[in-house]
Amino acid sequence: MNQFTCGAGVCAGLLAASMAFTRPAPAATPDPAPGGCNAPASWFSGRSVPKPDPGNAAQFNSNCAFHQFSWQSFLWLTQVAAPGKLRFETLYSDRAIVPGAPRPREHVLGGVNQANSHGILVDQNGRAVYTAMMIDDVYRNFVIKNQLYTAEGMQKADAGMVFPNGALSLKSTWKIVAPGEDASRFYTTDATIELLSKVDGGVGIDANPKTARAKVALVGLHVAVVVAGHPEAIWATFEHVDNAPDFGADQRPSDVVSEHSYTFYKGGTIAADCNANNASIIELDARTQILSPPTQACRQYRTGAGDLSNVNNIDSLNHSVLSQLAPRSPWKNYREVGAVWFKGKNKLVPDWTPNVDPNPMTGSTLLSSAVIETFTQNTTSENGCFSCHNTMAVTDTNDITRTLSGKNINTSHILLQKYLNVATVKR
Image 1 (tube, one colour):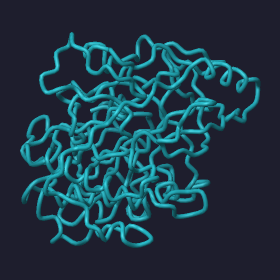
Image 2: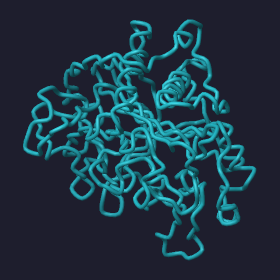
Image 3: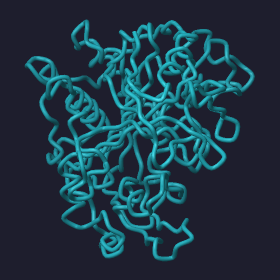
Image 4: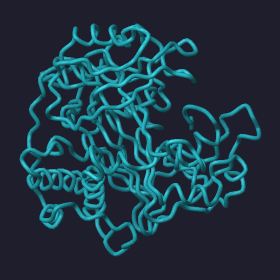
């Protein structure tokens, strides 16, 4: 079946090229060992998962509690909330931080170049992986009220200003489903994608891109929620279990990571050939939208690292949630990779980065997504959420009027992208 509707002869090329590829068979995923961190039965006993309460400070009293909040958020966000749409698909687009933005809840998949590395995750069919960013009404109302969508508003904002409890932002990550490809293990939907072109000597999406309709499968969801006592937000990453293999604890560069094939990994690939940044070598056939070479993605830190209790809690909670989901639920094929937040009484302060002071962080302190931060997992200054989402000053601009002092709200790249008017924010 042709999954595309577009003009100028583009669809014929897309269909012909995608027919030449087949998705590798899903790799087997072992059940994690059960432990002491479990999902309450009440999440699954009613018609819907209760909305998590970000204002109840008393609940955030253990490592397990933060992971429970993350999983509950994921389940709540992935419930059907409107005909043909999950709750996260009904949120505002990140473009909606500007008052009067047209079609504020329309989600066009227009992100392909990954932050900092500028590489593009290419699946085994040769297609780019796309992203979209979304925000809730708490986040949007706070930004508009304080005029943080303008350069002047960002400059005037107090350095200690923080997002209110419940402010939520997320990044969804999608793989294009080839005609005839089995996507039964994924949540799928039809979406508008922006087509690739050659941009500034590389590959990306230009300022006025052509678009197409495509069937897409969800491969990752990155969720950040501000909760009571934690204005830094809980940053949690969820991925499909078929995405990529994990490095072993004693993984050597010359050793094969897995004999199984995954969505973004060809079985038998050695570790040294994983997560290679392709920004300078990637090639595009603009007519078919096929990229080469395909990416061999691996997950460097299985749970985003953390101490033994953090690892055990993630494994236990994943096991508990998946065992209680309905047998045919597509969400049985997704899991929490990890989550990171601040420990104890550590407070978010301006001009902070974990690259200088990692002490405030706890949980999955080296958390990266294999499908969102594929190429920076082994870069010490970039292999964790707060490594980029910190409160440091923004000075990497040639326009002095666009530099920004260190502020707590600088953790949100949605604000910085709009403020700087650039595709990515470098730190």
